[in-house]
Length: 311
Image 1 (cartoon, one colour):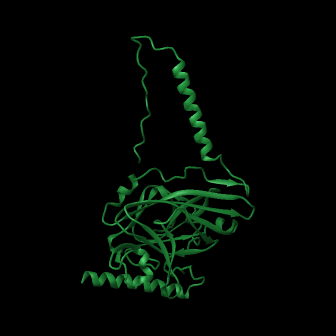
Image 2 (image 1 turned 90 degrees about the vertical axis):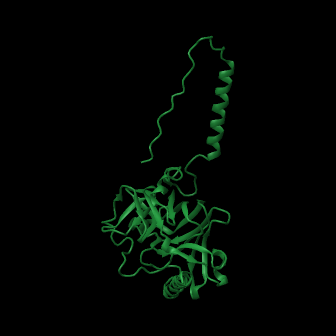
Image 3 (image 1 turned 180 degrees about the vertical axis):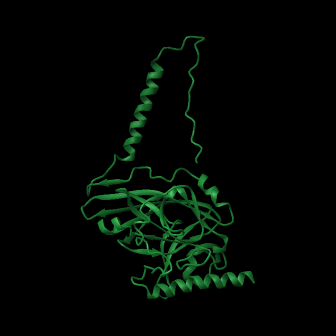
């Protein structure tokens, strides 16, 4: 009986997504129902960045770029409360509840999800009660007004106990894979400026997943903008708050950049590595050339700083 219900729920999700996309324009943009807020419509209410750690496991959220006090950054727009608010990715765990678990259908077009009957946790393209409904958008007012044509979204790395696949239901229900973490990374897709899209987020095993993403764009004045962040997903019946302790900080390893078109904004990473190696080699030479320490002298003490507690 449970298997039958699961198969019916899977079919309903996939068929509903295909039906909605068949009437949407353009095909990859899913219109948000009137009951849900349209990103950017509450720009005054959502202008500030929310504070404090939050687990979101139901309702509508979007990931996207915005200018936070003039600084390009990737954040999560949380529409689950009123007023809506933008949140830093390091403050959010996106929960994929066990009720989002479905079985891979027998249809061969969905074979990229696994063998028929195998389980996946699916955040669907179409909103379902009690399941998180994540999308992505480029509708923040300043982004929509200043970005030239599109935002580039890259999937840089995925850490987790299983596989991650993001796909869209196209016309007639035919799936189109956007990201597949089993293939070589990075991968990228484009987001038309002032657009709002939903897709199917699939995870093959329960546990914590870290998705390292980058969003970049060129503004109409020729400046380049980029920011790198990490999305945290807690999949299955585990305590989602544990995901906050997984991995390192999700902040970008480089500051958000605004640079003239066609020019790099920072020294290459390998240059920093070479410089560090030179400093280390110099230190070794200095130590070897120093006179031996006098017997009985007090040994040097390496005092390390106390680590942050992660709160």
